[in-house]
Length: 598
Image 1 (cartoon, one colour):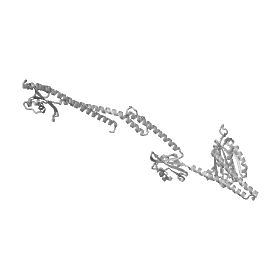
Image 2 (cartoon, rainbow, N blue to C red):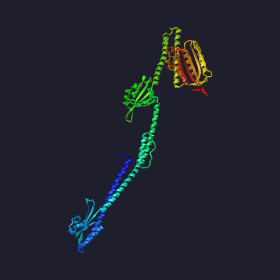
Image 3 (cartoon, one colour):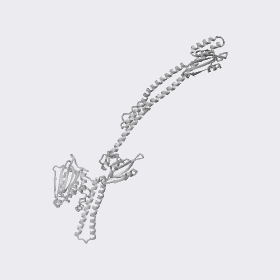
Image 4 (cartoon, rainbow, N blue to C red):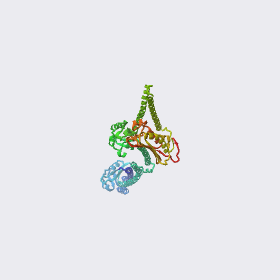
């Protein structure tokens, strides 16, 4: 029987059964003793009374018939079998079956003891019939001398019948008590088990992920305390799970928005977590959920890292660099860190950082340092050689040759001055320390003025310079000096790299909230592979020609910085052998806008 309710009812039944059995046994025993004692006392009194009356016969006062009548009268009163014997044990009078023993010596233990002066009785059971009989004998005394004895034998059937009726009543009472116990036991057990069953149901609901309704507290006893405790546990568990869920969502949100990839492996090398950044860095076409539970070596066989993973699984953090075809041309720094759950090793966390841009910046930095060193070394070498020549041949050189040497030295100094000036300007732009004088500016007028300054150099180079402007262009918000610097750089480059007979066109048009200025030439153009890097510092397509023409390789970088600082954009399109077009767009003045100094 697995039900608590059934077990409680069985226990109650056993308790009632044992209690009723104990009560019945004690009650029957006491009643039996009571009835037998009363029966013995009553029969002893009758025997003593008969013995007293019999003395008159033994004293010779009454005839033998007196004794017979006396015995018959007592038999009618008591219903017992009576026998009277003399001192020798001979039957003088008797009733019932004993009457056949008249004149004979009767041997009975009770009569023998009574003739010796000791009254006594004993209950004996007839083994054949199963009935009980009380045998009693008292002495008959005459002047303190035992002259005979009176014996009574009476059946205890009435007493036994009464006791059996009482036993039947007790048995019925036990049955009624057991029935009531079953009913009340189930009712009482239900008051105990119903809250427990409700707690069990709610526990099953909670185990399924739902919290449902709280358990009803119907009492303040232990069961009520259990229900109240379960409700408190339910509330705390719900609150704790909500907090865990919130924290999990926060962590997942953080991981999902991290630029770094995060990937977690269990001790067997199976993927247990993969954020979107890791999926992108590792070029994984599947959703993160599709690879969870699969082994790292199965999903990313080309990455290897078996030795590094083994070291990390052993508890040693490892950092490794991945590049090349394995990562689609990207450079990744991978940190492998073991993590624990309590004191148990729980797996490895891989943090993937895309350091491609850092590597490129580092490469650019090294290239920048090399370019600056080279740009300075070339004029310094030239200056040093010419100065040494002048010093070694002081007074021996012709004045015209000395002046030519000094002119070269002056040109190289000017070149270094321009380089240092451009570097300082780039540094100020990078640091944001440039003070801008942004005001409403008629860009068409500025372009026309700058173009006019370059018209004569263009004509000397055999080039045609033209300006076209869309009518009704709104003013832009810009720093005039900086815009002129951008235009001068672009027009100067166009003149340098356009052969004689070519054309340079300056066009102004409006594009939405911008005014776009384009400087287009019919020059040599820029190879397609060089175009993405054309705005990098010190980058030259034709380094020898650029240096010959006096360029520092910083002009377009400065132009881009200036345009972007105005909130604009600068782009380049070029076809080798056909020409190049560089355009930049600046935002127009908003309604009600004025000058801004920043």
